[in-house]
Image (cartoon, rainbow, N blue to C red; front, side, top):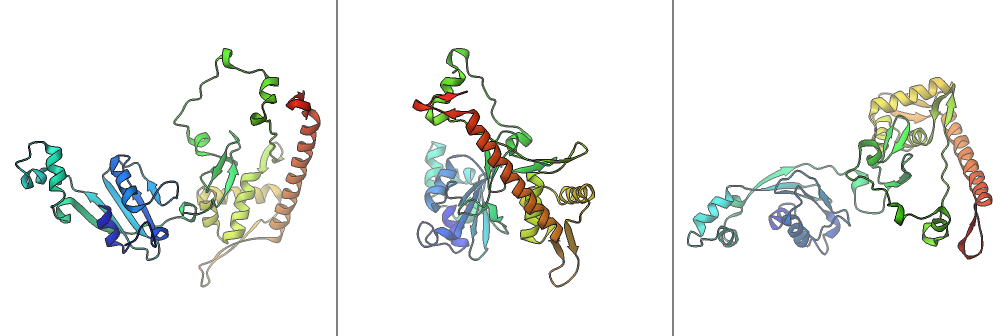
Length: 304
């Protein structure tokens, strides 16, 4: 399957000269995935292998330089045809192993040319972003966070986890001073800044990232994609902020050779700058206060 796929997209040295030109998309978590990795050299760790849990014996191969891509599906009837090729072998798995060596590709696979668009945050290379979930405080890379009701959340906090946290039994638990004395378990203080009007949140880190994305992309739609929300939700946030703050934040432009776009106003840039100054000042103040209250003493102990 992989030899055929690589040939179709013009990749002839997947682990050498062409290693930066290839991405594969596997649709099953079976042994065939390991075979694809072995032949192509693509791995999840290098972000050159993408896993989609479709449960299908299918793989797509994409040449990043040319944009050519094919999807190859293993034909189900190849199992039956294997018996016709090797009728004298009684063990069906042994018969398949021998038959697949001589059967034509057309009998083994369905090959279709496809179009695949890879988002910038899914490309190999260094992470494009790293933000902190406002619920669990864990960090999320490559725009996997979601902006929900003005809060930046990881997928686990937004949609639920695949795991359930288990409480530590009392006999294995640590008292606070003991945990604080472990150098590998040092406490950290975290703070976040919201601006409210009449008790309603108007501006915070999530909306700051939305405005920054509009400023960098020149498009509300592209900015919404960057912060992982719908265009409709992004526009509702903008309108709510402008109405409550009493300033125009985004200037929309229609028509023109580029089809229009959006720009941050000078008022928006000034507001962002002031918010970031305020945020940095509060974090600095909180850090200093934290150091005073939880002063680290000799031998790693804390005065609490």
